[in-house]
Image 1 (cartoon, one colour):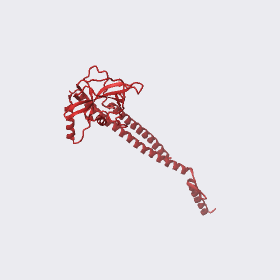
Image 2 (cartoon, rainbow, N blue to C red):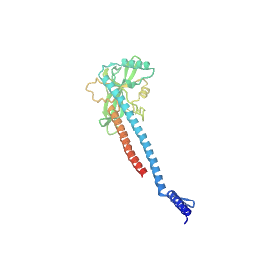
Image 3 (cartoon, rainbow, N blue to C red):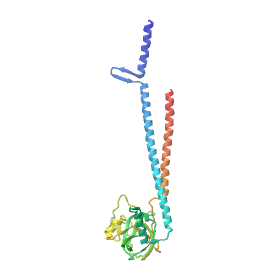
Length: 299
């Protein structure tokens, strides 16, 4: 064999090996070799890895945002609890004084001030009559016992005329039969009383009064506007809970907040821990992946 023919044979052999290591054409079909499969698999794993990284970063961001939100809520509740503690040791003011200060605050801010700003304030009230319409607020729970909160609608004299005041008279347990209501009897209150004011949080699922034609009247929500329409007289936009009643048979419930600040701080800590754990796991997996990938590339 001549040197020229031998050289061509060597070139053809190298070209054939290169083609076989990548792809071999058989007619119109393309045969994928193991080298090609390994390359495609590495590319797929690389895309999956970076997708997982992006998903983890988004999840960690959401968890941190939830933690910050609960932290803000906890600080807000803490300030509110401190305000309630300060108001608990203050002397009561006449109801007219409380109403005037509340209206002045609305004028000063040039926008309506929520009645919830009066929560915990102590006030002295003077009733026009010692009795009034009895209402039972349904679906209340006290230490695991289902029952009602007793309310009385009674008239008070204010600078703007007579108004109706919703008075909280305490908790009464319900019977096993929903058709049987507690026997409250006639309640007579002192004309002059001292107590604290509060508002109930709005039920996001239902705000209807749900007044039932029973004795006493059963309601589902303490809807002040609906009560005003029912009585035909303005009802003041808060509830009065007496604190000067001696030997009162019904327990007074005081729940100014649905959730205390400690719970918000606890939830915030949980969100932050979840974010830290998720980020740590992703960093560990990412380190192992990059280390393995770098080792394979060297080979």
